[in-house]
Image 1: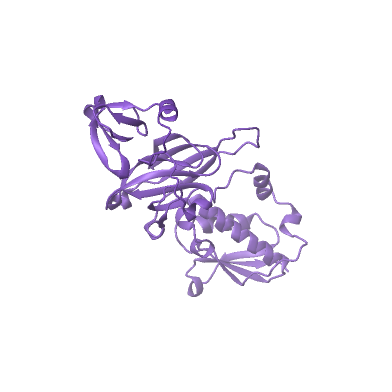
Image 2: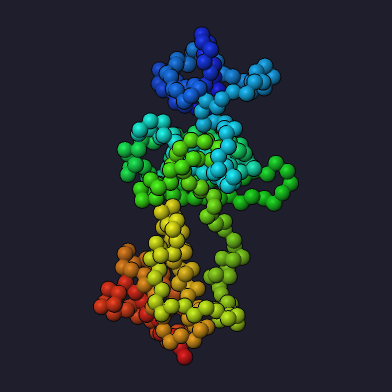
Length: 320
């Protein structure tokens, strides 16, 4: 028996889904209305899908997070893959992967600790359904480890191959506790968010163009908008979703904004432009200076005066 298996009591009428396996042959099952009861494994029998289909065709209420819920929900209209933290009581929350798309989803869920990872769930969650991955105590929120979700939508007929998608996430309280709502398919109040809407798949051709720009890419002939004299690259100024982004994703967005505004400044014949990157750990400043040192079309660049930006900015002087 495994977590997620549908079972029936040998000496009772209750049916449910296994939510926890314990030592000593004891398991926990969730029956109707969300109640959980401890039962010895020897007192349970698995419910076969064929038996359920042919001998008990009457619709039943969903007993857990392992099948879809028929009730309608406004959030159900937006297709996608979601993570939901569903309250079981004041502190214990079930971690549920919700596949509100039209295709089955192959997934792997890993938690990270330093340079090590631990897989806590993997498998296939069918289209328009969901599966429980684990449980989390809300009072231990600050100790929840970062995690990554790898997924791919499966084609049931000949279609364009779906790319493998990976999302690395470290939850932050400032955004997590604002995400409460009716989770898709579950029709329950939960902290939930979509994990597939901002995934960027690797485009080798585009990557080569970015690393080896052509002259017409640096100096486009099309009319461009003149950028402001100073551009703030702090991540909270560029996106509202930074709480769910990894460090590499944030740096990529900041560098893309920097490059776009620099190119526009050159084409607009600006004399100079200032990029505010902050002090921080210096990674963004280092990447900006490295980029500028290899670029033609500028006269020089320097750290801005302390009185203006506290050395948290770089001034770029553009060739006339």
